[in-house]
Image 1 (tube, rainbow, N blue to C red):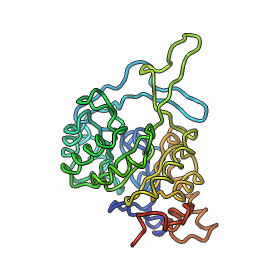
Image 2 (image 1 turned 30 degrees about the vertical axis):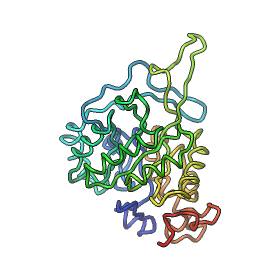
Image 3 (image 1 turned 45 degrees about the vertical axis):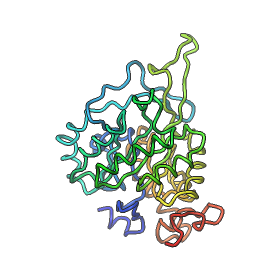
Length: 320
């Protein structure tokens, strides 16, 4: 079991979500978790974050959906998934066989649709929902929820009104001021923030003189985005009282430590899962080695240490 393996040194509490390790899996890069059981013991990750799940089945985008880029990749999968009914009937019962928290990433096209899927997933076996706000609001001409503080806050309120589960809001980096976005979702009631989602990019085929991806643009992930992600976590950690799950280009233990020093209380591993399907456990072991080298007894001790005034810079720890 994870608890005996890590002797409690690695346990974290993210707004009531108790995890035996701070290393989780990033939505969209780990399927529903079950696909990885041949390579990784699910009970050795902090939580399994399943791919984006919608009220009804979604087919995703047409054409080429992914392309490798220098130090990363672009994808435009389009949130393909079998829908909430399938997840509840077939996937969740299998996940419940493992002693690991389950976080379900959800999305919709209107605030009301987010609320509907949150309500449907308010069942035993689901430990938290993660709101993907990087989706277009069809009621408002297609503006992406995650680029407008008011729209993002409306989605958070709708989800909070329809679930008893812990709510995480996943922030988009494709904004002018991410601190304003973070403060807006915090004020709306989110219990935690995960960041960052992918950066918007494009790859052109110079021979065809056309975009490579069927959707033209795609989300950039992988180590190329990590310095941006760490910078944004560093900023947001000094502005909000809710815990942060840091993500964006984590490939090794050192990367994960960097996010936690910047103020993340936990981390999520994404693109690296495609290369090394057992990377979440490997990273956890490497983090323990770092702790031993630096005489750290508990992983929570390093959160925010690289901020200007250390942990005192974080509202999360003020008056704690």
